[in-house]
Amino acid sequence: MKRSSVKESMSKKIVTVRWDQRMEEAADLMEEHRIRHLPVSDDLGVIVGIISDRDVSRARSPNKPGFDANAKVSDSMSWPVITVSQNLPLREAAQGMVDEKISAFLVTDDAQAIVGIVTSEDMLRALVSLLSAPSRFAKASYSPVVGELLREAQAAGL
Image (tube, rainbow, N blue to C red; front, side, top):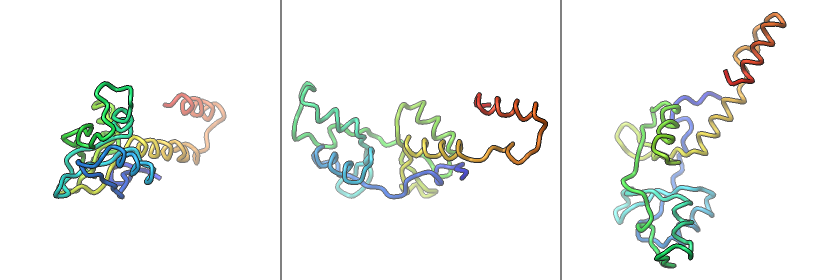
């Protein structure tokens, strides 16, 4: 399966947490839905930030200076949220994650409405799909020498 744009690889189901909820509630949501990122909404339901499982873990660490067992999501969320278009090539989104050192982008449609989330896990699924696809050389019939060279090139990632 070829996945060339963010739209084809993003998760469309978005679970959010409110900015004023406790970090424990965010952790429970992540565990319940088996996810590692939660967009954060304000009182009007507008997405104002994002929180990751790492943010939750850091905030819940009793060894952290200033630890507060009642910490709120707003204390640890990243903001403003970085979004990408659903039409962005997947390669560019992956490069953006590398460049920005982040593991998720919220995805918008042409009207700038949030329609999904693309994570590093989604990128890995796309990579697995790509690596599992039949070789473009598989159907061709080559001499044994050329066939061996092609197999070595593929094994080397070329």
